[in-house]
Amino acid sequence: MRRKRTKGSYISVDSLIAKAVKRLNLQPHIDLYNIQKNYKNMFGKDVANYSSPDRLIKGTLSIIVSNSPWLMQLSFIKNDIKERINNDLKRNVVRNVTFKVGKLSKFKVNKKHKDYVSLRNIKVGEREQKLIDESVRDIEDGALRKSIIAAETAYYKRKTKKVDDE
Image (cartoon, rainbow, N blue to C red; front, top):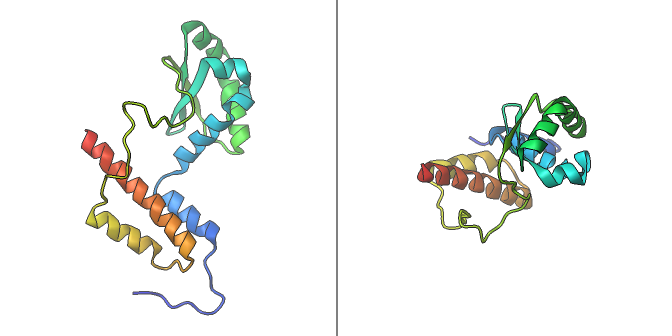
């Protein structure tokens, strides 16, 4: 049942976005994006050319390093890396840093890559569509409503894609 609003009882956009980020568990992804985006500025061109943040899971940041000597060098400044990142994000996000040697991924989406799959052809299930509709039913601003629907739809499509891949 819809709750009637009294005049002047609007919901702020900030609170709606914060609820959507929390409900969809997007904060770790946003944090990783910010780390990747600012990595070169935080550590310089040399370090960024030989290492790259890969994933952030439960406070552990995994960094891919191009070779063993760089892995050793970065392991010596592990605590400094953690502190700089947390200072840049202005909160304590990274509690641990791990390194592994591997192929560096440059921070961009390559649509021509063999593993890239478009979400355009993936359909959202009836249950997920009901959840999306329920989450935006009280939002009166059309543009905001459309943006949240798009974000949640993409989330459920990715989730469906992961299940199909397994």
